Image 1 (tube, one colour):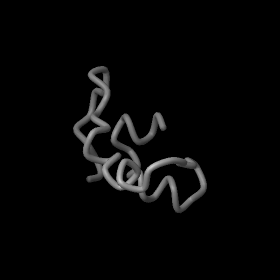
Image 2: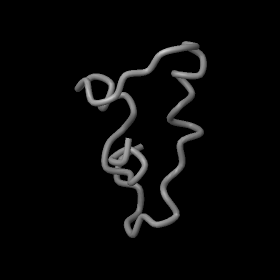
Image 3: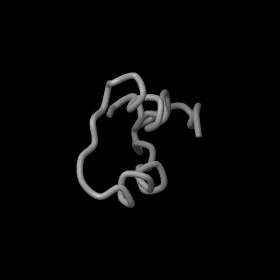
Image 4: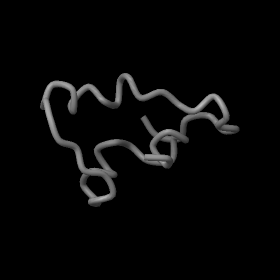
Amino acid sequence: MTSIWLGYQTVAKAKKDGRIKMTGSRELESAMHQWLCLSPFAKVSKIVA
């Protein structure tokens, strides 16, 4: 989750690699990348979209 939050990895890649597991609504899962913003403490621009 931290690598996503810091912009180093996408939600889809983390899910595919087995680094994150999501349960619940498929609609919320598919929109996660839209509402998960970068940390205000991240010192780099978002690396991945």
